[in-house]
Length: 168
Image (tube, rainbow, N blue to C red; front, side, top):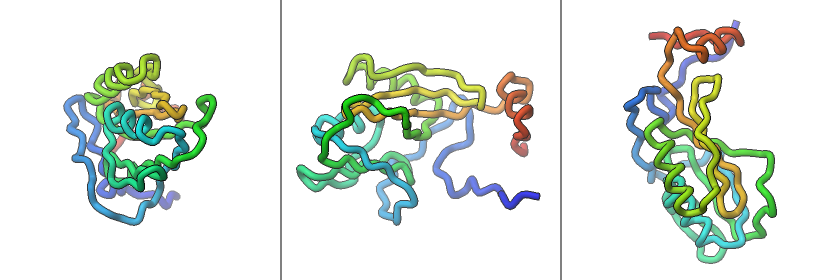
């Protein structure tokens, strides 16, 4: 018996499709259920990369101290004035996107900071992932779900680990 249930209507992530359209940037104010705090020794350079490279926008800033960035609903990042990490950590933070955004984000990241992207990679759990290392050494994974094909190796992988096909 399981206590889980479908709650996709709470998520801004669209149904996986080759032509999926990303939701609009979300400018509403809400109690943030989750956010990432990123230390940076150059708020302006970091904000510029997150905005122009990763598709976030500046929701608000406290000059010299903090920049609150957002993409879709529930994709919040707080850039805080502090010493940046010397090296990218093992820890990553992942943000959903749609398939059409993966190549755009890779190109934008490489234009702003050559060598900052790795991938994209096709993952066995039916997604495409792009790793981006930001100017302050945050490891960001942009992940896009692929349409479900019941005859694909990814579908077999999911069945093998006990995950059944989504209801049609």
